[in-house]
Image 1 (cartoon, rainbow, N blue to C red):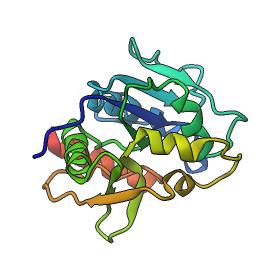
Image 2: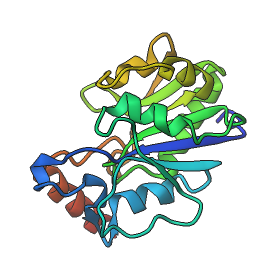
Image 3: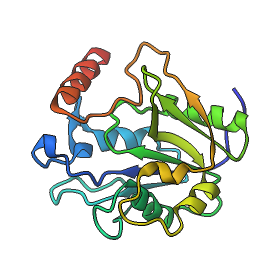
Length: 204
């Protein structure tokens, strides 16, 4: 594997309404004894800065020491605006930024290393993201050149789709070939959550 970039930041988006979970924030759903957000923050523990964007429930556990939180402006203005808000807390020295949906229970440090290696080998202005088994690009499960994401996020309007952040950026795709659950698997429905809990119990 190519040498990894020296410094990266990570932005985790937690601001969804989660209608299918009776309003419960997906990032706070529990999988094998830990919330999805806790699992994700552990996977990105070596980031120069970890930024959680979006409102969290009043009864949620405090974030770990050093993890930053910010709200998008205006509230619930979409993932692109959320990333723009998170970038305000990302130091200039970070050459890469991981942009992650907040409902990925199997996003691991190993998955991040795959992204970092692929992006590094491709060059400083290239991003890397996971594709699912059907070949669909998972835009909120990738690692990007921070400067180019800042460029695209500047002045982005409320409601803009996430893909606007990645306009004009070359991207390498990564597939998960391990036997373990894929890092791009997200908990969009109760059935997804049941599947995640079943997989996690098997891994244990």
